[in-house]
Image (cartoon, rainbow, N blue to C red):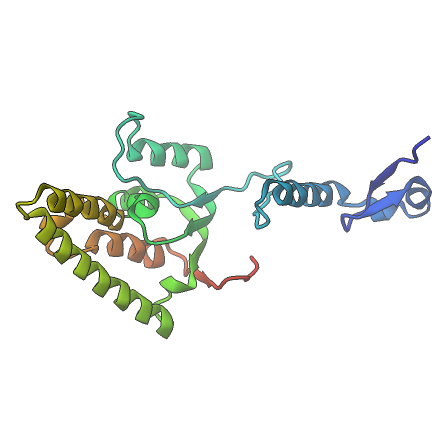
Length: 219
């Protein structure tokens, strides 16, 4: 027959003989097995970087982004989503993550910041590119703003063209620039202002200093 094995507290395997000799080494083997199993499922599915929780003892709530570009097909408003988050988490988020500056990822932090102020947040995680004290991050932000301003000017000129093809291109560029939070970017006076305000709220308005992550950093 096949010899059965059980999980060691370090996530490895133990024989029945080893368990009998050292039963204490199975302590916390259940949570360890969950982590090892989740890592393997993620690897097979093509997602090697995972955040896992042991939910068997105490619930943990992690919010990764919260936004929309204004889609109406579902009939669900962003305010309804945030209300559900508050109910489900009992106004307690252990981790809040804003992955990057696109309106469909951070809109709620701008338009519904009063609701988020009612939620206790233990940790805020942001990318290093959002760090106002990082010189390279600020250089990239300035380049992005300059490029965006150029695109806005180009979109306005194209949209005003008498050529249907050029006008269509201008509207297409406008739709892409909508990721920066402008409903009508062709008439916007200050490009990306709403987006910047939403990210600033995540950085300073949740009552906890954010941690800025570089690629490869662990939790």
